[in-house]
Image 1 (cartoon, rainbow over the protein chains, first blue to last red):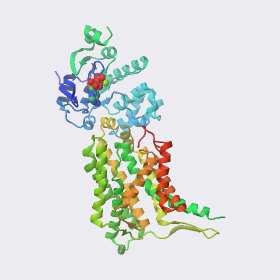
Image 2: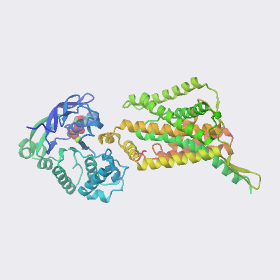
Image 3: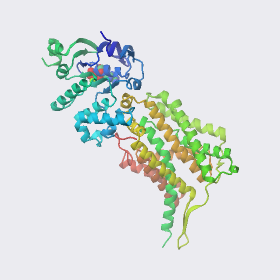
Image 4: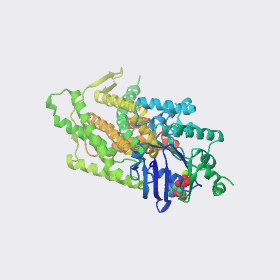
Length: 237
Length: 309
Ligand SMILES: Nc1ncnc2c1ncn2[C@@H]1O[C@H](COP(=O)(O)OP(=O)(O)O)[C@@H](O)[C@H]1O
Ligand SMILES: [Mg+2]
């Protein structure tokens, strides 16, 4: 079998003395949507950010497309095929929508930026309407769209999403999940962290369940949806 | 007609030229604060070094070289900008970057140490006495005598300061507002970690703000040196404190704030020394600061969270 696109091997991450990841291993294959679900404080964000090198894994290995990126500086990891829409969205509030997108395309040339902005606008028509508005004045859903759009401006081969549905209305959530599917259809591999386990598992090819810094279950999305333990812990029975 | 109008106009001209210098230096304080949240206390010394590099350059060329005055001034400013920028860059690399991530007080102490070091370094290298700057820019842009015998004048050196400062501030505003690097500076001041997650080497953006701040201070240093006619190793402290005050007055972190604060402080100070005993000028200037901060704690144009650069 072909080597996985992303390979996480026995990764430990600490905040000071607190061990937030206790030997996590997982894989993401090219073209997949893989989700990571778990309760608040389980270590989902920590894992996602460890992939980006901040915080840095204390031990273990992270390989992306065969290359060991565990010790690379964050900006080098992010410049070569990985992009993130982080927890809390972290759009630049004082920049306009367009400027936020341009920041995502920082290393692209003018023509490529224009092309990619157009692509993001057609995925998220709301952003086109608001392109000259300061990003901080937009609604939560719009900010989430912007965070994903900004990540897409980096032309990632692997897109990391941290709880894109958090705090949004059901209609917007449905819209965002549909766009994640579209993004994958365009050939981008997606690693999706979610507390909204039902939707995430329904969308994903495969899923992992994290508890207390350790992966406790790994299976196909459908199987996890049907799993009695998962239903009880994350799907409300 | 009394003496009020001519006096007023004259003080306005003087205040504006002093304020222009404060503004140029205040930008360096405010940009560094906007991006890494620290006060670069050595920035006043950077200005002083800028003045000395200008002087050394002029001395090295020698007035005898027969070059036209404008070319001498341009060369002195350019050399000073280059050398002083290198100082700005090196200060961050040596004194601040290794301390990134430590408690806020630590880089502050380092900045004060760097300030003392630079002052003494120039003191040892150049002596502590006033050094005369060549009197290159002479004459007046205009002199107008009012009917009552009072004269309002603007010397060429003052005019040059105001003109250059305004031109640089316009250029800087356009650059920060429109260019790719300017956008990166603004983004970093809002969320440095996120900029890093977009693949941006944020250390380079930080270095860039130090270099830019130092370059502007260097221009200010050479021009004020030429205008006042003498410099010493201690001018950086006084002017640095004033420029820092201007930055806070305008709203630290805000570039337009630094410009406004600089102009306001310069004008206030000049008017105070014209109409009150000279010793009061700093009292008035700092009273203004306290008063404004009482009513607007974030300064005139400062916003607490958004758009720090
Ligand atoms: N910056 C931090 N400093 C210290 N502890 C942290 C920090 N971020 C997260 N933690 C701790 O690490 C654990 C995992 O957190 P996190 O990865 O944010 O969980 P999740 O994203 O699954 O909600 C939690 O116990 C949390 O308190
Ligand atoms: Mg989280």
